[in-house]
View 1 (cartoon, rainbow, N blue to C red):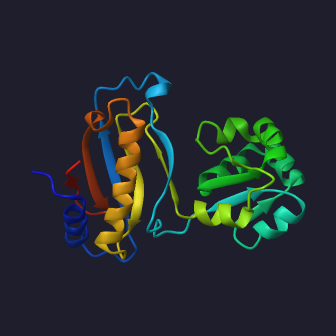
View 2 (cartoon, rainbow, N blue to C red):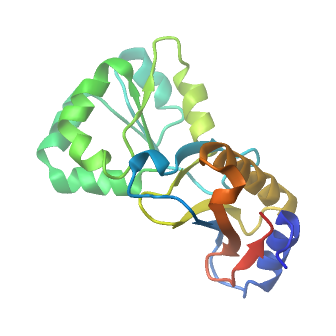
Length: 212
């Protein structure tokens, strides 16, 4: 018998052996009755967690002028057209940046050049930037993305996403999981029937099944 979300989170936190680092709390989702070779059946959603991720989220902004200046207050790095072109010529640097960064944001006019210079690196990783429209507030966008996780199944029936950190309350982590499960159910063709099982665990702790 699977536990309710909050019971499962409490057990996962209680049963995790002490570690000398701050562990993340992860959710594993197993899908069923889906042909994931068909890209239209795959899960690819950005979800804002109500209680936050509990972790630092690396965000890089591609921007110029005033938007770039404002982005410097909140983003981990701000890159202009010259840096973008340099990355286009340095595949290793582009891959390192893509692997170290959780999310990219870009002014809409730069999207075409980003596609040209970095599309082959960012595209397969699911990290093409979120376009920033002229009316969008870059500070607000970046702050929202700091609490965002990406849930992506690709062609695999089992996939994972971060839902918090071990020093967050079970209630807060449960709220995050609830939002993810609801989003998943809305995105899947047969809703809850496409979810086989869900488990929660800390980085090094045992898995505890959640009642879907």
